[in-house]
Image (cartoon, rainbow, N blue to C red):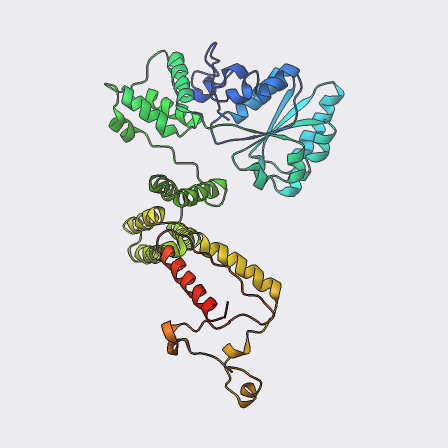
Length: 436
């Protein structure tokens, strides 16, 4: 598997080998972009200095060096490197690996078992590692692009240290370009703006960047490319986004919190991130409808109307025309006054309903369609509010066994400030009429 990246004494696999293979690091010091782990004070640096590895789960996006670092770790502490892929391996393969590791252990040779895509093993397969990790038959190093909290079982996580690899920043990717140019002994056929565009197009993936570089070197160009020429020649890396995994939940969380924080620019950015990555627009619309009630509520009742109208518009127009309606709803929600009073009221009312059980409403507000119901007091003394001064009777609507509660406390923002004034007025009338 091609990975990352050395500078001095560049190893050459074969003249025709992939560029990423030819630039594979020979020491941990050559790995770029992960100094927080590989540096002297990083977790990996400390393990290597001590000459002792614990089991590790590397979690990070593609092309950041998980495979290479694992291989170099084994070399650094003198361990045998045994790689497998969860995509192509099953329990039978694992048994062979464990048996071989036991044989090598009898000869005094320790095994670093590297499991790529470890999240693809099911829970039972993950459990099969436990006894061999416990007794030291193998030191497990797993690699995953998915959140280990969701994809790996607790028993395995408790026996391994999770280390997070960062997407490669522009400086790290620039280092890779310098190394590629040194190996190829000629500059990339790009002007300065196109070079920056090439780095941006990689989206933090070093392997992808080097594959793009290899394509550039394979084409005979009369003059350096500008950004437009580069775009015409190469494709851009698709954003890392899995609609049923962590990337999905991270971006919808970022969108929701940007809306709540009244930042329309950030909200629009995360909306664009989701939709351009292939998120289902109706999912985003469902979240906006929820937001309109949860975080705006009666501070601006039109927010919910706007979101539902955006839903109708999108269903009527489809993509891409209908996406503008989603943008409008997003911007409306971001710039609307905020209140979670309805959300808080709902939770409090639901809790009270569960706690109080089946209390009867007071008889005066119950309908009495039969003679018997009238005889037992249903509807007796009910005042029709429209026939009372100010259209407000101030009657008691609570069960007799229950004190009146306050669930909804409107804020002082937007339309809800007017609602608060009305409620305060009605409360004063209740007090005056002895109903409070």
